[in-house]
Image (tube, rainbow, N blue to C red; front, side, top):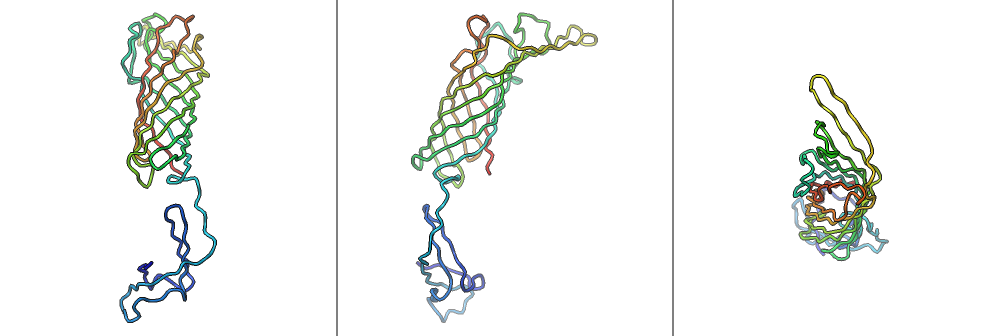
Length: 252
């Protein structure tokens, strides 16, 4: 194979390594390089190069374009309508989710991957009159979660990074903590009291489905929770189940 090389850039004994289709070829500049046209006086010459039969450097199986890839990420989402629980007043703009996770994917083929992720974070439901009182100016429920997700990835458009992809998966959650925050404001100028406490009656195990559409290291996601957040003994109206947001991968 003929390669154009700049004469001023190479010296005798230099080694050129070429990575192509998961193989590494090693080429050495020296007596094995024979000018195609010795009478050519231009700055750039064409040389025949000979493959040096030395040990190849095996490419790593881990990386963005390799068989396996592991990367951390953060996600920020919002609890969204529809919501049929008319007993509560929801503030959707303040009802948010924040998660930090670690994602693994393995290539089945160029366009199809399988993987899983583990993440930790919290959900915040800004819901008023949760205890049936209208006295609270600010009120929300916060649940702390550990999530595990199994997903499949369809790689729609290849790229140097993750490309354009679409994920579908199922997730499970463990609610390991919760907190009920209330700020009473009978008179804005006189009385301001704050109360924090844990709520009994949460179902500790949750599950639902997720979908993601992304380009390289940024993606939009949506998820729906099928399980009930409260058990039957608590007798509470169920909170919204739908969530949507953005996920940002952290390359390293």
